Image (tube, rainbow, N blue to C red):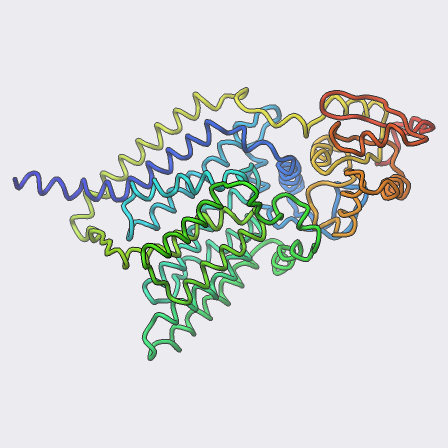
Length: 497
């Protein structure tokens, strides 16, 4: 009997610490297996190109060098670190490194999520919870900078909520996470905003006599986090650039990831909202007004822009974990201390290394160079070959194709950097390619001295070009169609782009 009791101590400790690692590796391997779904956005292409430029020049971009419509205008890369990381793992004709890096970020996010819920929920049950939440977010799971920032977001906000649950100030160890987040992706602005909202929850929950002292400590932490967010090559300009896209007005309703949520059919996001309402009525859970404020803020953000659904999915359970645990009387065994923790740590380390080694072995055998391919309808290689032979310099294309042109060292008319082009320009672009205003299309062709167009065969502008005087169809395939001016002379190879 004594032997079984003694041996159960380290085993319990191993299970407590090892399950998040197991879940993280399992999630990583799953997304490694479906890695092609992350290679369907042309923004990935120019993100990698910028990372390559930074590595090659050992400098940061301060002006646009990739378009002919905004050449030389002020522009900074607020996701420079993610772009460099993607560039380091990218190899031409081999997307395995990009898929592995993105899958690692998703696996790390799942492991951190389960670890943060550990005080309130068994890891196995947390895994059951995180599975549909990840599926809810899959629409925005793309090989882009926001994915590398996802585990940092969960860890930072989880650290804030843990401090609020303890009615204490956040750990100063969260400040390096904020600095890392600010270098990875512009979404760190949400983290800064949540400091105030979560701090308010901590202050409202503590004893009245301690509120002023705690409010002071949260305020100091907030100022320190603001300073940490400026620890980038661009300094405080990173903060300004990250908020610039929110000033695009009407344009935000036209860009897919900035569109409001669509409830024309039931999906996991809609089902989760209905589930929250049902639980609220049936369970009798009572939230503090500050937690209600936090919950409504996350819901409002997800309703406003579909890109915020993953933040809603991963942060809402952290906001609700303690109130639900207290309401349902969920208790967790205390963590091991002293000598009891030592054998548990050793066993956990050995087991974790074994799991990681097994995961890496599977990765090497599965993620072969020919395993993944970027979506073809945004990479019209044959059509671009035709344009290069013609030495076309000013090509009117769709924004997705513009990302591909950048990788071919051809300056784009437009690409995914909406904050660079501005609201009016992008609205005119949409009117032109969608055939809403032929006069706008003609004006853009003349204003920017377009000598060729490269459009997906499905967009209305491609069919309009067939009937415009002075233009002729030069090439077409299943992906794109090329039109050139009837009287366009062939330019010399030395012509400037």
